[in-house]
Structures are given as structure tokens and as C-alpha cells.
Image (cartoon, rainbow, N blue to C red; front, side):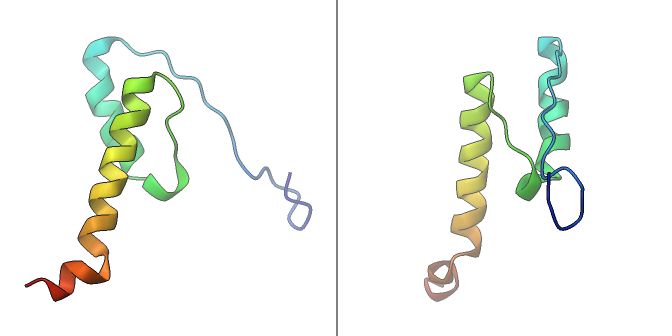
Length: 67
């Protein structure tokens, strides 16, 4: 709990999805990239991390100086 606002600092969700729904769910999570984290399954956590690194590379200062 956040003692200042008496609100939860985070919420854990466990969502069981069929394989066919995982891609759509990933797109939903990516909308909240700064506030969401995959923990399990490992392949989704790694995919989320890779996507975050692509964004970091896109917006890093060297991306603007290499052109």
C-alpha cells in the first residue's frame, strides 16, 4: 500500500489464456508498457523485455545523432 494515498502500489493479475489469445493479450499489455510486467511464462517475459529494448533504442539520444 502507498501510505500517502492509501491505494495499492501494484496489483498482480494471473490470466490464463489459450495459446491463440496470447498475441492479442500482449498487444493489450504493451499499451501499458510502463506500468505492466510479464513474469510468466518466460517466453512472454523475454518478448516484453525485447520490445522494451527496441523502444529504448528508438528513443535514445544516439538514435537522433546517427542520421
